[in-house]
Image 1 (cartoon, helix red, strand yellow):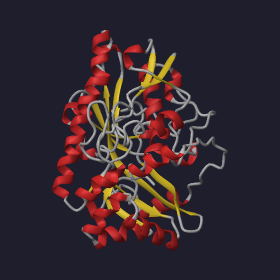
Image 2 (cartoon, rainbow, N blue to C red):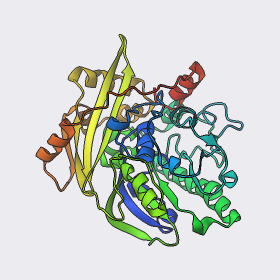
Image 3 (cartoon, rainbow, N blue to C red):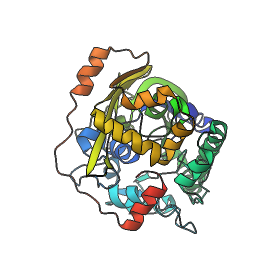
Length: 384
């Protein structure tokens, strides 16, 4: 799972090695997307909305379908004191705390194994082959926000380094064990990234095609290579893997096996809580996409939109891009209730019916506790 890889920035070496699908990210934010790709459920059904939450113990993931399940132990915890040790903390030790962390070459067969990589995440190009980084996100945007040429150059470097880590931590261990051709390898991303597009940088908000569309590539000798004409969604991952591998898979998912059924559209949702002078407030954006475009519905009250925009421009590091290179379109996207992107093959009325009918799960979910040091790291990475 390579973080923040846009559909239009999918590495050619990865695309050429397997069958690639244009994918609708289930969320524009890391934790809900991870939960969706592993459980096959949309965010309003699995209940995970942020970094401080565990995946409910009642929910199976695709990893549970295998005799041995694990997470990568590569967490950038060597000599970096800013964020290297933290980068995967909220995913590995909170969201997916039920699984052990170990290198791929120590996994007993048959196994299901998951690795999160920095990919195109800020600070662009700053993560080394051990996933260490020497600069915080706020410092990065202090230097580069407004300079789109430099941002795009650094972003490209980040994606290239992600491919090298993929080769080092996934392909090479499988080759050395002599099981590469017997292993289904999936390369995908949790959400895309805006790099000056529409006046914005980063992920999450606003919902745009640059953030909603990501690549997914299935790599195995028995599969074709090239680009599929079928749409894929994060929620389709468990059923598709379970079908290809002839394993049981999680029950009651929202997804399908894309090799036997072609989905027409998918949701991309985000519902985040932000601190305020008095209490906190929610900022929620719902969107629905097919291969050619989609509709975005910002359900947040006007006062919440106003508070978020003020905080985004003054507190959130990526907001410096819009502050330094203000665009009317960029500000408008934070306030308008509906926006059409591209030429979706469904009507606004259809989108309204689907988006306004979403009801978030009321089921209780376990919440992880992050200490003050971890919260400081979240700030350094620009999340809070």
